[in-house]
Amino acid sequence: MALSEDLPRQKDRRVHRSAIRILAQYEESGSLDPALGQSLLLESAYSGDIEVLDKLLKHGVSLDAADKVTGMTSLHLAVGRDHLDLARFLVERGASFVPDRFGRMPTTIAAECEVSEVMCDFIVEAEAAARAKTEGV
Image (cartoon, rainbow, N blue to C red; front, top):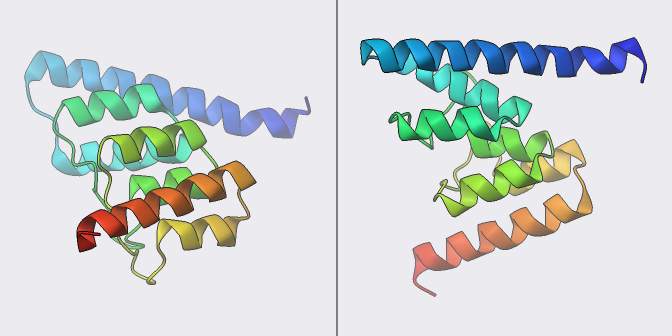
């Protein structure tokens, strides 16, 4: 593996360790800044860190928290980064299928980011099921 290929993994590990430290401080103090929790949730989705994301959800961070600039949720990020296990995790826990600020649904993100065929199939089916449930079909 080339050094440049390992840099994203090193960043992901640093983010994971930082998030674990912040969560430990939260457990000691009993308070987690909502903006920090949301930021950690989105960063965890981007890096595919199910462990941290799950802990954040257990500490009350909203599953559907969205980036203030882009409107992207953890589901958008997991799909765009092709983190299939995380996308499944989020859908199983009831993540909402909502558009970002540019009107892009998670299926649109999958197409734009050219994710794996397995991810495309999964997110199309999950979004269709969510739509059918919402519409009472």
